[in-house]
Length: 305
Image 1 (cartoon, helix red, strand yellow):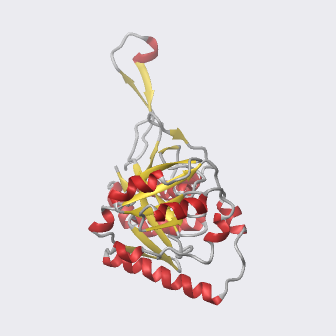
Image 2 (cartoon, rainbow, N blue to C red):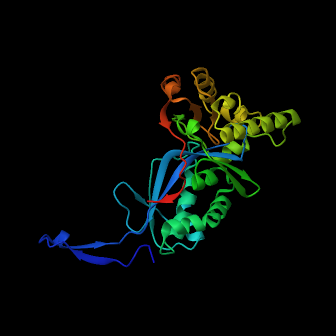
Image 3 (tube, rainbow, N blue to C red):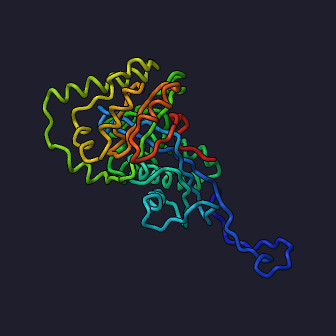
């Protein structure tokens, strides 16, 4: 069985009392999970896109730069949900409360780690039991757009509890994903509370058309189809209004040469897909109240490292 084993004493031969009998906890597999950007404008609660920010999770004592998680952490809860036992740690470059799927990353990672440590072949176990990981993470998260992208990589559509994965072709793989991350944070629950309970039919029709355009652009690997594809009339306007600078950033990035842009998840981050030769212009066009990252689409998804 792969996983944290019993605590053992290892002598290094040193005469120093504090070093001679070091107590260590053998580590098991490490699971790596990508962040995600959700909605992609018109695909509210449906579309997700995995991005090249990652979190590593593992059992036992945390390595350098990692944090031991308490039992109330989303990753620990998901870990226990699929039968995981014992302490776990997390090391992440995914910012919390910034609309890049931190809680989804944690839940997918915890669930995947429980599966990875339950058998002799961790990578195969994560692959074969991905459906269980998805159901557990989506249930705990309350929606599946972020978690499906973090689990499977590439672009995904969450449809009535099922996931459709859209492969990323070479043109979009070469694209740069520019994200502007404001200093402010947001809460998904508070952001959802700002949304209107009813939507006008013309706005629904608008979003259906644009969501289809996004899917077609990805399916055909044709960035030219992304122009206007992330326009939204259901959720973005209300959410942008409560994030200072976000609406201006969205407009500036597209004017600077991005193919498209959208509010990432519930915000406050704004994301753009652009040709690599336009990335610097888009980055320079962003407001000063925040920072930018230049990323890629992650096509690997959750895996054992």
